[in-house]
Length: 435
Image (cartoon, rainbow, N blue to C red; front, top):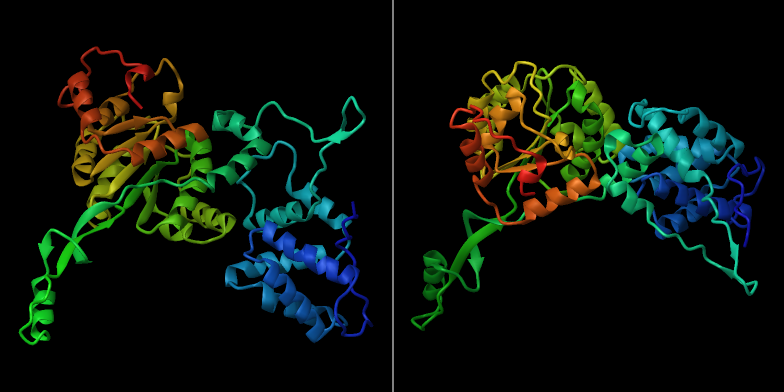
């Protein structure tokens, strides 16, 4: 096995501008791989272009060499800070990588609380470190073979609660959250499009075709209803009791916001904040840094009724059209004891096609809807699902892909708590809910 070339092999100052070869060419290859691991969309073609750029400008001047590589490896403006830090780290002392990684990952630190520049530098340093080698094992006959593991770390993390994860486990789960998608089914809209077959005759197209047919018979033209995925609106609680879950779910919300159009994300604690524009940024670290700067009430109190009233008044008419689906992520612990919450939940439920409530408290087997806020919200939701680990998000995807059972949960809630959310002394546990 060949040894990985050192990243710190700086080109000699007086070298001639010739085709890169040997250590220089190998370091260019590894530099492109490090950029790809850090999140830049570069591949084999970019590696060849980088080597051609090194031939064109030479390696005598460091700044010319930097500009040449940036010209062929950076395609978007937001990728430039990543490239700049990667270049400074890669083409210097290789021991600098270990020092940078150690300084940006102190023991016991919770992931997601660092400065955005520190996040980028730590990610670059991690991408440049050599991959750990698995220990080889000797078989009984003396031959080498691959080690066999009896379980998958990914499978274990799927059932681990976000609140009990270590910093390393949280970092691994963030990557998995970025790969999840929500398969919303396509629904027919009122718009129609031309089709080979359909249920409605396109009179305008048929007459236009008949006019040019010079009296000959022409076939009918048809139109059918266009199908499109409905808008998705997420209302996420960022109060103190939801802090850890909200930080993890933001990685999931960033992934689905960039995956499809018409996704709107609003955070609420003591006030309501629309963060959809911030989550549109391609780099997740920069997007979350902008979110933290835009939300002034993170990990504070909870005024669910007041925030839903503001949403219904300011955002409902413009976001909840065309059969929108609403995901309400909250534990239902309201500081105002559910004041005005019943009326606002009823209005929200009537304004959308489906209303799903995701509550991390459902992870407990003995969960009972005792708080006033939960009793006020339950009669107006269509699905009541947990949201405390990766497996619960997979359940959410299945629920969205299944046909909508409109008002099924709401009907059971009204039967248990009455038309106005009054508790009828019915004790419900998590096993009562069909999810």
